[in-house]
Length: 164
Image (tube, rainbow, N blue to C red):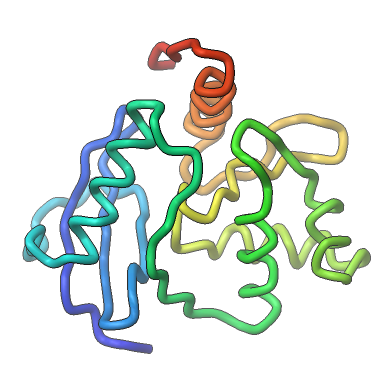
């Protein structure tokens, strides 16, 4: 595990996230209630991430272009890469993702990889839903998952989303 060299917090419309970076890239972007860690928003990786998050929440960014530091198993990395291929405003089931990583029997393992995703939003696990079309499993809470999906739908259709 690489050393975190910079950390900051970012206030989103659906809660505060902690952004951490290593020399390689953004290592995590996760919801938090804690805001007492050392801040270093001047770090270029953090500033780039904050800029792209601003654009996303303003409805002007549909794809993130950041250096990411993925720390996980080979299977988890394959899942996370497959999640990045789900277009904004679209969803895929856990089974769809399992098939994309050529492991159609690994639906539960895909769910586990999604739950271990340290790059909330940038690696869009909120776009993964149950095979029946229902919202399931999101570490940030289903209300945030629904908000993000509605925000993205609104971006594509020129409509703003209200909070909750």
